[in-house]
Image (cartoon, rainbow, N blue to C red; front, side, top):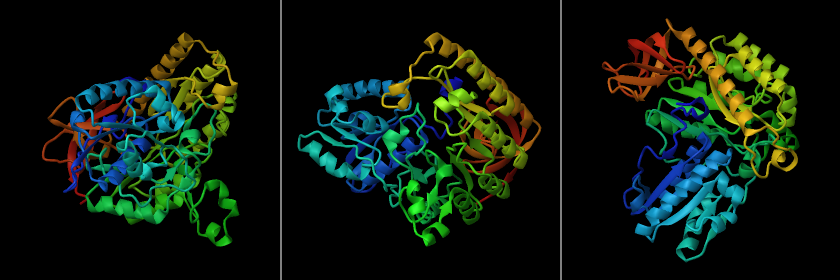
Length: 484
C-alpha cells in the first residue's frame, strides 16, 4: 500500500463491516463512510438514530430504501471519490426508483444547497451537527421536497446516542470525546465544516466504554479533531471556559485526567487516542501514558512542515523548535514511544529550503508512520482566499516522493528496532496474505503477523518478533495472556 494512501484498519473506507438488525425494522439503510475516523463514528451515530425510525442497515445497495454517503472535504481527492460514487448510486436508483440518496458530513456542510443543484440524484444534504434531524428530513423527502440542514451547533456532541458498531470487528471500537476544531490552520476546512470545539461529558464517555467492555471489546480509541483540547466544565465551547463559574473551573476535567480515568476504570481494556495537535499536548498526558500499561505507546502528532516559515503561513501555532522540544521530551519520558506524522508537500510559496527543513525534521524524529500528501487548495480556507498556490504540480509530486521515500526508510528503521523483542499483540483478524496467520497490533500501533495456532480474535498474545518489513512485524507466539 502506498504511504500516501496508508489506511490502518480503524480507517475503514466504504461500506460497513457489520449489518445491524433490529427486530421489527423493515426499511433498509445503506451507508458508506469516507475520510477520517470521526466520519466512521458519525455513521454509527446515524445508524443508531435511524434504527429508532425503522431502518436496519444492509450491505446490498440495490435493496436499499435509503442510501447515505458520509463525506470528507479535507482533500480534493476525497471529494472526487464521493462524486464518482454518486454515479454508482444513480445507476442503482434506475432499478429502484423509490430509493432516496443523502449526503452527510463535511462535504455536505461545505457545499450545502449547491449539492442539490450539482448532483440531481441527491435528495437530502445533512451536516455533521444535524443528524438528529434526519427523521424529519426524510419525511420531507418522502413528501417530494428536497431537504437540507447544515446548521453548525455550539453544544451537540451526541453524547446520549449509543452508536451502532458498523465499523468494528468486535475487538476495537471508537468513542468520540470532542467535536469541532478551534485551530484555524490556513489550509484546513475542518473548522468551517465541523464548527467550534466542544467536549463531551466524561460520565457519558465512561458509560459508553463500559457498554463496550460488557460486549467484550478489548480496545478503545478516543476520538476528536484535537483530543488534547478536551475540556469538560459542564458544557459549552472551550473558548468560553474563562467565563465559567469558579466551581466549574475548579472541577473541570482535561484530557490527561480523562485518559487517567479511563485507564483506571477499565484496566483490562487497551486505550489509544487520535488526533493530537502539538501546541495543545501537555506533558501531563505523556506522564499518564507512562503510568498505565493499558495506554498504548503511540501518538499521532501532525506537524505538516519542518519549516518555520511554512508553519507560520499555515497558522500552526507552534514552531519547529517547540515541536522538536516536545518530541525530545516524549522520547525522554517514554523511550519506546512511536510517533506518526501528517506532512504536506508544496504548500503555498514553499521553497526548496523549506522542503529540506521538512526532511531534516523527519531525520531528527524518525517517525514510525506517516500520512503524506501534496497540497491541494480547499475552497473557503484562508490559504485559498489570500495565498497563491505557486508550487508547480511536478515539484509537489517530486517533493512528496522524497518525503515518502525518507519515511519508508524511517519506518523500516523503527521496525528493525523491535526485532528480537517480546511484545503483547491484540489479535484483530486474519492476515490479508495468509489464512494461516493472525494479524494484530502492538502498543506502538505496528501490525504484527504470526501463526494462528490455538488463539482467537480478541486474545492478547505475547509474540517474539523475528523479522520485519517497513510496516509489518513478523513473529511467533510464545504464550497466551488471558485478559478476560
